[in-house]
Image 1 (cartoon, rainbow, N blue to C red):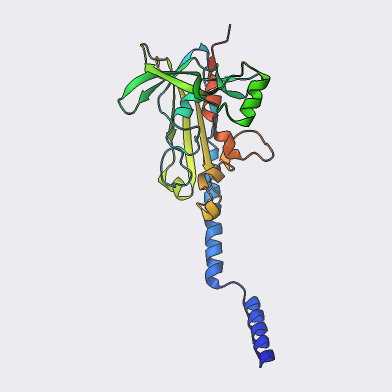
Image 2 (image 1 turned 135 degrees about the vertical axis):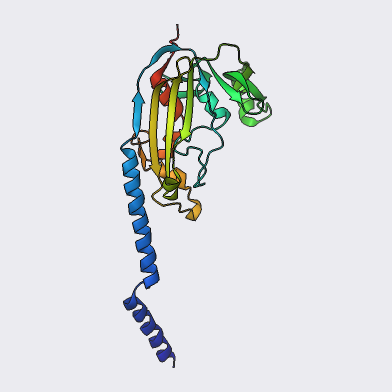
Length: 277
């Protein structure tokens, strides 16, 4: 009887292996492939219009007017038209990015001022324009009783117990407003979002003449078509499939990492910062 039972199991296994995937599974797989093929074709067509277009530059720019601030980042909302391609530092971090200094290698020093001298922005709470500057501020104190801190104080009697961090200063903005503005728009259509394609326009505008000095048009597509299994974030993975591409080829560095600070990087190609004297 035991032998008969094992034989039946083996027969069932072999029968299943011979039968293969069900017609429903095959149809589902084919539909997914057809969807991806259509999405890819649509994405490649959009990429024909993508790129960085700089028409005019300006030198010795002291400050900028951020016509839109970046909201909380969107990682997986398919139809929220909040420019996932343009994902950057959010909220106050977006403002700070325009004030940070670059080091000799061109990397950002997030604890030092030295970028644009100021950034103006409209506060959505009261609709008024404010001017932001920034610098290092004392935000706390280290514990003098902690073992490592005690050792540091023994080695250096002048050891600084202060904890510092880059902070914004916000005051009502004086007139006139900065001449040069920075703004962005989501240019996706409903059909594009159906296929997890996001389109973006980033502009630098001469507010005195209403001239668009530079514009970057970009698109990205999630090849997983919204798959969220295992905590997957579709718009983060879409950064791997973008035009223009994000950042250089770096082993072990995800593409979405290079989305951060992308606005400042592009704007600085057009609005050259006042040189230090």
